[in-house]
Length: 324
Ligand code: FJE
Ligand code: FE
Image 1 (cartoon, rainbow, N blue to C red):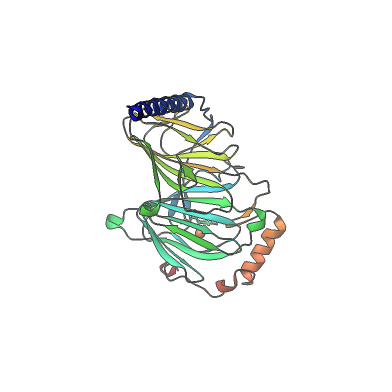
Image 2: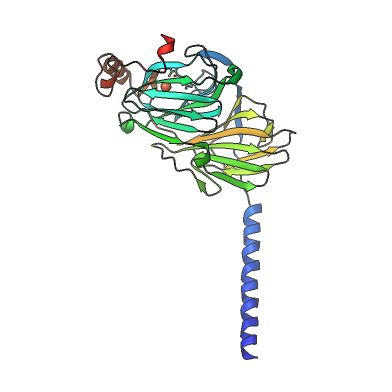
């Protein structure tokens, strides 16, 4: 009898605690998530790049500059026979994410590989990389499609050792905040799901798919530069509905972004957010430094095969040979 009494008291206390906890959670959920606002929407127009390749450039055109740490985002579509043969890089990271098809890669230290649909290559060029990025032949000569993002490096890491982080589609974690929403966490964090990618400057890169009727509030780091690039469907960002192939620049204040899919198709878009760097951007093609002097040094180092470009001497990629 005594024990049953004790047990009852115990259960009552636990229930009160549980109800209190649930109420608090409900309050938090309903509490003010303030969405960032849409500042600018810019349609990405196709242009030629590399050798026979087509890109929709979003960041990095005159309409979209000063989005530190981001330098460029190209939505590329490349048939077999075209590509980006032997070229150098210094001072940035190039992040290549395949949407359809495959790309081969080969660099001047012998690093080579292939990324396929859904795979990621996060390349830190640092003091110097020379490489070739070429598409793979597909059935019916279907183009190879993906996104390449260029992230600026903080001044102190401009001349760091080059490094690669490569992840297969299956090794990129997913968050499922609700049944209508799947978020692939390429870098950063979504609903507590964290990517294993390490970045030298804070970057969150999320590939979001939303079924019709889906809603989500994605948190974003305070004051980071954030933009969205739309791929399919007609998602609405803080109430603004956007078609495919648009870059949506968000305000810097607010807890994150509210998105709804009020359309009839799946909506797919990438959310890219980064810690702004307080430094100059001086760019000459694939060399990105913080002064004209350092650009001059990069060109000199490249042409004299020194200070990171030693292996560029007489190097020709195997995969780029068909282009010469
Ligand atoms: C480059 C011209 C280029 N966008 N998207 C000049 F074409 C390139 C370059 C790329 C590139 C490569 C891939 Cl795989 C995807 C891209 C431009 O390689 F770096 C300079 N400077
Ligand atoms: Fe490149």
